[in-house]
Length: 322
Image (cartoon, rainbow, N blue to C red; front, side, top):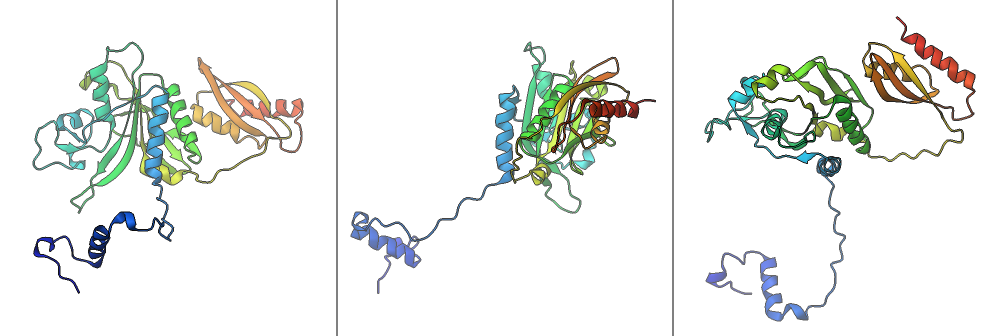
């Protein structure tokens, strides 16, 4: 039996505390150096944090500047962006009118960053931010926190589209596609905005900002913007690596020019659906309504004849004739 002194009453409460005192008095250096006979559990990997870390490194490597903004924005900015303040959570005791509402999008704050830096650098400004957006839930006091990626670039649409495609490909996100947006966010230009899908899941949007919004915030140029829900995106990451052997019969690469007013996404999808012998379609450039593509033809079991390829090219051209 032992009695704990009054001055140690609060820090010796359990048997482990008492064992520690015995070991301290006896001398830690006298204890045999034996590792515990248990297997320590490995630390679980958080797929969202892993994806966020990769995105930050990748975008920084291709010339983007990471930005950090306050999670609170003003009523004035909400109104300039065409957003409804009633959809946002408002602080009851805001310290300033500039920081009253929890933001539901990262793009408005990023546009202000571009406004404050316009004219200060010669090359197009490219920025990104990864932070939480806050979705108001009726009947609940606290919002839903959604990890979100926003990218703004002073370069053209095709450039930033290629960058996000490459990023999603490196993350191994399944079946990425771009489709004309039917219900874009209020500040996106409906005529120049596309939805980003993984299979049938909507991940986000890519496009230009409405000219009226740019005038209200005094932004002279029109950056291309991307906003993606990372919480949904990680659900579509393929966690299994697939290895394919080098084909015994190499594919044949041919270039084609398509004269069509349809969107590039529709043209590419139409070409890919023409035949199973079409392995890959890659966009090259456009000029006066004519679009050039590199098309890879191939068969896993034999070499293709040039006559077969020419027949497929004729079928493709016929599919775009008015």
